[in-house]
Length: 88
Image (cartoon, rainbow, N blue to C red; front, top):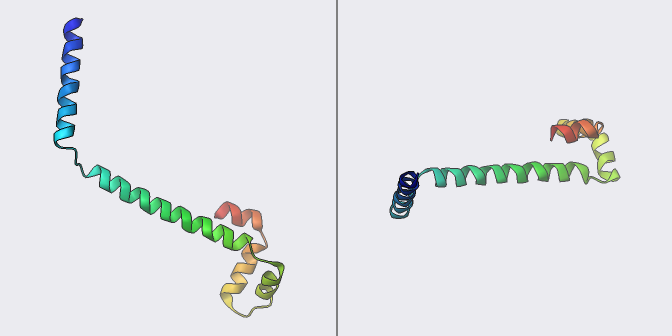
């Protein structure tokens, strides 16, 4: 039993030594890049939620009377706020 503990301790030391000598791996920068992309996507989605639900009544009235196709789409989305929130 002591031999197993000694072997596991020595293998731990070898692992730590190799990670200290060669600490760089490509998984860390790739992981950080993916994390950055996900944070940016989350910020954009949160921003769209704030933009939709912070419209004033006058803004919604302007959207209702607008001729622009995009404005009409935004108005139709605002007619079902629960569905809009679930979609966002």
